[in-house]
Length: 207
Image (cartoon, rainbow, N blue to C red; front, side, top):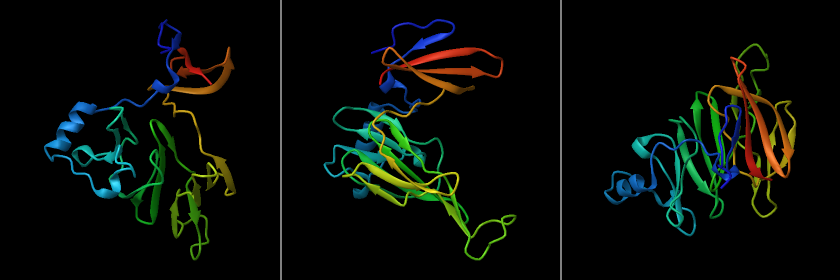
């Protein structure tokens, strides 16, 4: 929609199209589902069965919408996924392990928003900060769809109440970092720089 021109230092792209690259298309996924190469458990479907979370080649989770034919790879790697819990037709909470004494959690809001809380260390017996904690995880303390909030620890070990975001997740261009974002003419502009000093300004559309 906003992908109208590309220059050496300026990229204008659709905000909702700033998705992480997808390794597998809808047609490929649906073919694997129909031929039973990919199985879908009942809990992996959303309540209306219009979408699901699938695991192609037993790899990272991918969102698939059977009505809009959209797909979205939620994370790059996560071999320890244990549960997929839909909270409504568009919001799913994925939980699992990230190693011994470590839990991981991701909230995904379709079609392309990823929420990850800060990791919090729990010290009950292991009180010495120089030693590993008893356990650690980034699971939210609460997700309330009706109120549109989730509750997490932040990096300062405080508990914060956050609104569920309504904008898609932005994935920076590979090899670039950003320290500046601004609103210009009603659009979100993010300025990126790489290790060689090359600057990119990306417009993610209306906000």
